[in-house]
Amino acid sequence: MIYKINNGEVQLGDKVFRNLDIGTLRTFITVVEMAGVTRAANKLHLTQSAVSMQIKRLEDMLGISLLTRNSQGMCPTAEGEQLLSYARRLVSMNDEALGRLLQRDEGGEVRFGVPHDIVEPHVPRILKQFVQTHPHASVRLYSKQSANLLERFRAGKLDVIITTELDTNPGCKNLLERDLVWTGAIHGRAWRQEPLPLAFTRICMFRKPAIAALDTAGISWVNAIDSGNNSYSVAIACAADLAIRADIRGFKAPGMAEVSDTENRLPKLPAYFVNLYVAERAGSGNDKVIRELARLIETAFKVELEKDHENTGNIEV
View 1 (tube, rainbow, N blue to C red):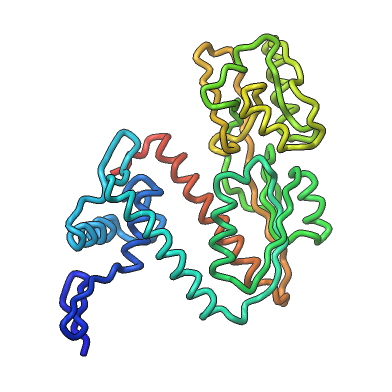
View 2 (cartoon, rainbow, N blue to C red):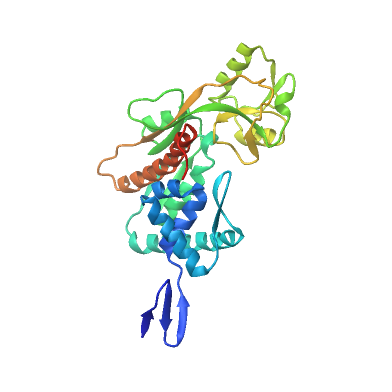
């Protein structure tokens, strides 16, 4: 006979077990990822008090403190970091199991396009979550320049695309609007060189406005590498501090950081829109998985919008 005692404990015969609640672990992970209770509550569609109570119950059950606060917001303690590793695995296994058991018949294929400039940080997590909850669906990923993606989308060759554009267009959903910023190696010094070394692919949408801004400011520049259209070569050159480039604020490749222009040498760059296009395929067997991938994309970028709103005056509680 099984008796539920309290606080996550269950008795089976003469043995007492403690069970970690998946929902509470998911809340804990979200608080860490969002660096605060308020943002986590918004993402989880819970009240702030409900999130706080879940974290307190988890701490009471384990008898340890899981979170602390620093200048960046809420962050895990040493014990919290240890739990976080297990929590992510447990939640991932839970979602994968439910996906396989509850959505056996939801197959289909989604043709998804995204510019390489904004693959990080969201797209890998979005795709991982999608394949866990829709294990019988497949995703064909295309990473091309926005103009190429739009052309393929309008020709019916792609189902969902994210683009970076100077404006919004009919039929798209605006996910975000942010300035371009200069990016380079972490703690790099290439931005101090004269002439300024640049690394762009020839078809990069950000190349033209970046060069125009430099020319207007009277700053000499030089192509540091001849990468053709190889974005991987550009990323390597910038991460190695051989050159700098322009990216939408908050979207950069691993090993890259926003240039710390302490001397105000570099000119301000224009703002770009991140837009979402979703194909209308009424009656198609792929409709449901297409809409689900689009929903995951919107949810991920909603977090970025919340960060922007907070940076303009909202205060995290």
